[in-house]
Length: 118
Image (cartoon, rainbow, N blue to C red; front, top):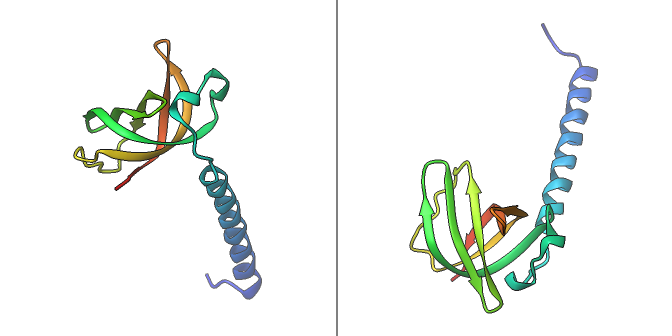
């Protein structure tokens, strides 16, 4: 079965539209402003935050990475599920972008990205 020019054009337009939507979604999560850990409150629940700090209590398994991230204003637990990234446990400082959540009576960050800070 051969495709004619109209079919190819339609498929191209659909793929372009999907790509533009993907770019807009990615941009929405990347424009997150840097926040102090101590400034994160329950009012931030289900919102994205970007935080920097020092890592402690690092734990890693096949399915999850967790650690405390501390800056000069406070400390928060960070969790990354479905661990497809390989995070070096020797990293001392990191930038985390993730969604604020509440678990076991405490705020935590469900990470979308974890980047080493040198």
